Image (cartoon, rainbow, N blue to C red):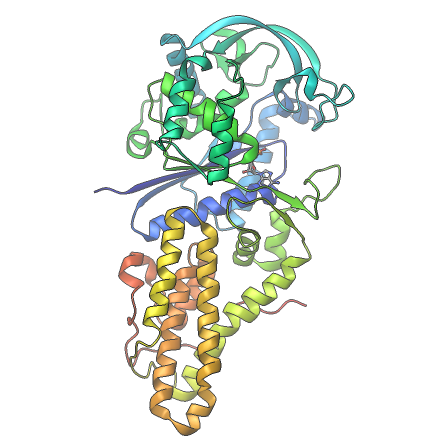
Amino acid sequence: MHNKFYVTTPIYYVNDKPHIGHAYATISADVLARYHRFLGHEVHFLTGTDEHGSKVAESAAKAGQTPQEFCDITSGHFQMVWDRLDISNNDFIRTTEERHKQGVAFILNRLKEVGAIYESEYEGLYCSGCEKFITEKDLVSGECPDHKKKPELIKEKNYFFKLSNYLPQVEKLIDEGKIKVHPESRRREVMGLFKQELNDFSVSREHVKWGIPVPFDVSQVIYVWVDALSNYITALGYGQADDVAFKKFWPADLHIIGKDILKFHCVYWPAMLIAADIEVPKNIFITGYFTIDGQKMSKTIGNIIDPNELVSQFGSDPARYLLLCQFPFGADGDIKAENFVLQYNSDLANGIGNLVSRVTAMAEKYFGGAVPEQDDELKEPVAAIWQSYQEGLANFQIDKAIEGIKKTVTLADGYIDKNKPWELAKTDRAKLAKVIYNLSELIRHLGLMVYPIMPETSVKILNTVGKADFTNYHLSDLNHWGLLNPGDKINKSEALFPRIQ
Ligand code: ME8
């Protein structure tokens, strides 16, 4: 059977610079994309930028640029930082691209045709910061609490989506696990939404100018959320001449999103798809939210961490690792920037890096850099680590992969302490040969485990045991015990992660 894996990130608003919250979602998607490619699946990994709406137009005006000029520059910031973080996306969608505009217009026409859209008048308090109407009770001293701005009272003609028609179906799909929402706590939160009032929502805006025109009424532009959600299918060619990728990759295997956009993805998006008679996504994973030293990341507080700075300070692989290792995937948590150096030194410099240099140095010192002989003392414990690593990743639990890496390092360090190769070198060469074999083979497994999270390090580790050609194979060809053969060359490792003071 043809195995495919289509994974997406949110498309990020261009009015913010990339920060570590964005990086977290994108790196997670990259880990899963790389893992599935390694399994031999055909992967399509999409990310991109969300470029319409009044907020973008306002930021552009402030910068003295046209909205398009502004978007070209700011979207570029995202593309550049993803390059620096070694993100392996197959496509990058911008909502100002022609292909997207065509696709979205097609979707809106289709929703109109099937009777899912009606015209009505709308009056409400609109916050351009949130890009949405907000209710009186959400205001704090008359202002939007998130944007510290007074909303405007707006009355306009709008087109509405008949959400109520599709809610029972969406609820059923999630309840029956046809759309799986992860983690479980978030699934319960979504199920709770159906018990509250969920209103029809407007799919157009009259007063906003920077957007995609409603195809059947060009006095209006399409609401940013309808525009944005559609990216997951317009990028595949939906509603355009060439929709081969859509036929091949849709439905999405996984949308990765933050909790701030849960309702849009778990309720509105499936409802729109059902109305348009398009299949619904299979999994939606809601990642945790970071605070920094106990506070929300914000420009006003000035505590935003730029992923570029992490790459400059630590390098790309460590930056990826340090963001992912903070807390279990799907849990919220607080980041303390000063911990990054401690974690780098403990997990990477003293952990992985030190282990690889010790083992390869011993192989060189005692056996002239050649694999001495075969043994399988560590075969069982490594198989057990792989099992939980793979079961974890099959359920998108990236923390299980990190745990597997840590367990492998601990296993190796414990094995060295127990066997004391430097003493065996004087007393028992036969035993020493076995010990060095087990350690070298363990390093090979470690190199494979590291790959989705730290791809460059993986190549360096596997290079020490002469297996840097691993990308030509599937993981299942490589992750069993005993592929190092007596006589294979072992190269002494450079320092993978120099200690940082
Ligand atoms: O919402 N911690 O874009 P956005 C962890 N354009 N992740 C965070 C985070 C934090 N503090 N802050 C942001 C939008 N994120 C829309 C999406 S999708 C069709 C349209 C991550 O630039 C998290 O994944 O505000 C969140 O969902 C995403 O950035 C929102 O990015």
